[in-house]
Amino acid sequence: MDYGLFLQIVLIVAGVIILITDVLLLAKRKLAESISIVWGFGGLIFIVAGIVLHPSGWINYMSHAGMALMILLGFCVVYGLFYASLRISEIIRKQVEMAMNISLLNQEMVELKRKLAELDMELETKTK
Image 1 (cartoon, rainbow, N blue to C red):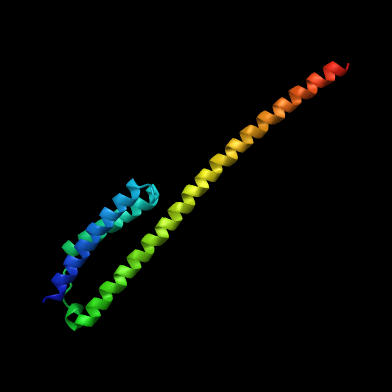
Image 2: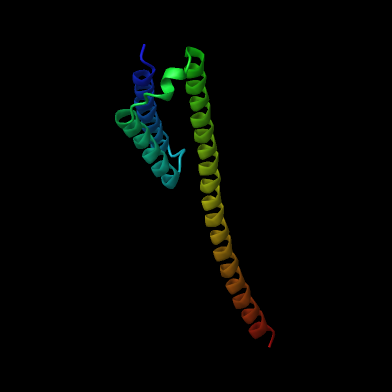
């Protein structure tokens, strides 16, 4: 089997899988929009690389085990980066939620201070 053609097919399939996974994770709100855009471009780059690039020279010196190892290593790297992206997206989402909570607490604190000032004014007028 021609390793070059096999590598091209693997790159195209990997790009399609990356795009599908990216869209699904974005739809489930598990991936931040900015990170999803980067993964979308990465998936497109994989697809274009599979279509345009034709490895010829170095691929002749690679054994079956070397090709399997390279594909396995690539899968592990992409999976690890997806996992890191998910964790970063989770942190971003929690940070935005915490900022909203802090804003609401600040608003409540201002309102309570205003009410306290009004009650102090009422108390002062009643005691005079």
